Length: 84
Image 1 (cartoon, rainbow, N blue to C red):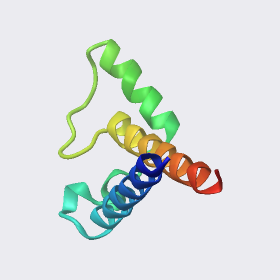
Image 2 (cartoon, rainbow, N blue to C red):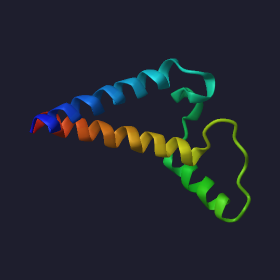
Image 3 (tube, rainbow, N blue to C red):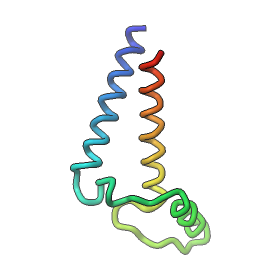
Image 4 (cartoon, one colour):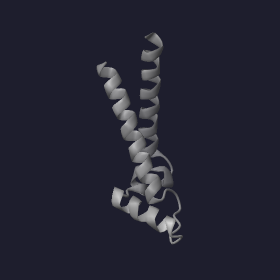
């Protein structure tokens, strides 16, 4: 159980670092640079499948949606582990 608790704190610290990095990092790594929604990500994936996707410097819409999902899943993991 102590390993589980230690892992929770490690994941929580990495999550906090990722959020700080997304707020104060370089231009293309900031959250403000890739503020695309799920519709834009789906549209981009369709364009990618038909070889008509546009190029993006930094994160494309699908990347940005994946980052949001990853952060959300980490928040849920840490939050539910804190409750347990």
